[in-house]
Length: 168
Image (cartoon, rainbow, N blue to C red):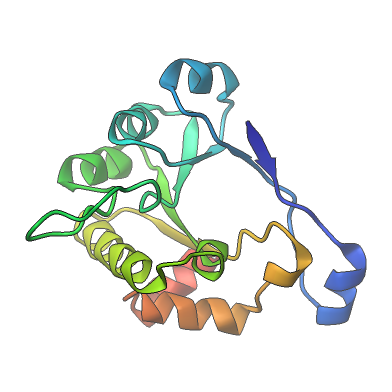
């Protein structure tokens, strides 16, 4: 299943923003994903096995929201979807981690999700993985300004220079 994020030209003109129409690949198993991958693909994260396949693949440019589809946190740590092995592979294969503001807007458990994102930011910083922030809006009401995304980056623990790089 592919998610295609919409563009609304009238909305762009009113808010004086630019949007890009992108396609996000969402698959449950690696076999189906392998068929759909093209150069510079953005892939929505899944279970641990799928995340490992994504990080080892050179056709992927971004893994989006590794903190989703996590069941429960462990007793003494969070299950944020990333670990040191995946982060080393992400850095080696030049794959960035995407943080979606839309995911926070539509979440029922915002506090837990923000905590998982904060942990992922710490891991990405430690292993020098590129990070990206965007609204990834699925309708025009989920669009956010650059100032809102800067604040979101700071909330999840990014430093000002990291936020600047994540938005470009």
